[in-house]
Amino acid sequence: MARPVGQSIPDQYQQHFQEGQKAPAYFRQLVEGVQAHQVELDALITRFAEHWRLERMTVIDRNILRLATFELLYVPQVPPKAAINEAVELAKRYGTEDSAAFINGILDRIWKAR
Image 1 (cartoon, rainbow, N blue to C red):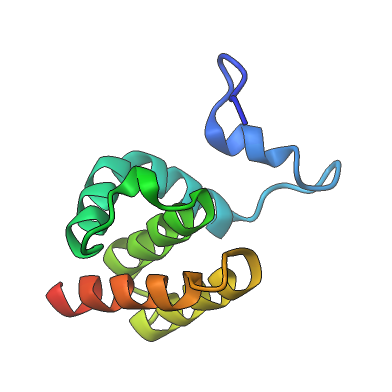
Image 2: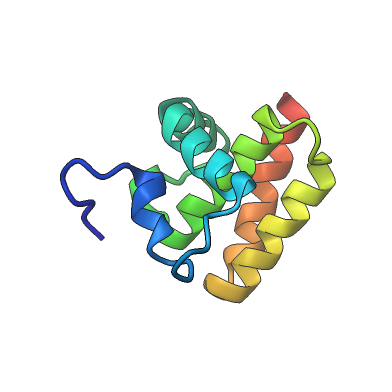
């Protein structure tokens, strides 16, 4: 989905919440954090995704990996196991049949190398 000119990513996603309801602070933290650190996150994901280029990953898998990697690196109040488990659950729900195992493997390698 193309972002309208002049509209920030958090503002773009605000439209998915009910009128008068503000996007939760944690949601905004994740979106803004991934946006601010995307180059670093993508480099880490690429490094630990053996034999997979970032652009070959499904959009869902790539974005789940970005969110979870951001949590692992920059959100210390979220336990690493919780970040990985939530990413795996998102992959089961929205990804392909192989997404959960794929994401779990990459996130586990990223966390262990940290």
